[in-house]
Length: 63
Image (cartoon, rainbow, N blue to C red; front, side, top):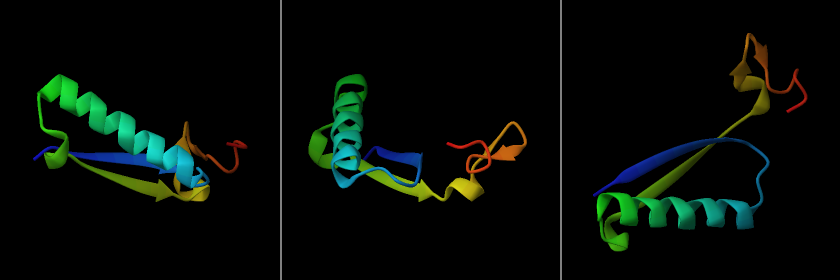
């Protein structure tokens, strides 16, 4: 059973997260020949102040 963990900065809409789940599932289905029913996608939303880019937080960088 393939499990995909996706980390995103918080703030995506429910529709955007649905699209990520759908497209990641489709990609694993095609690339790994896994049945869609066996694929799990976990989205972990990370607060902007907890996401570091080049030594600064995403929040400080305005992302």
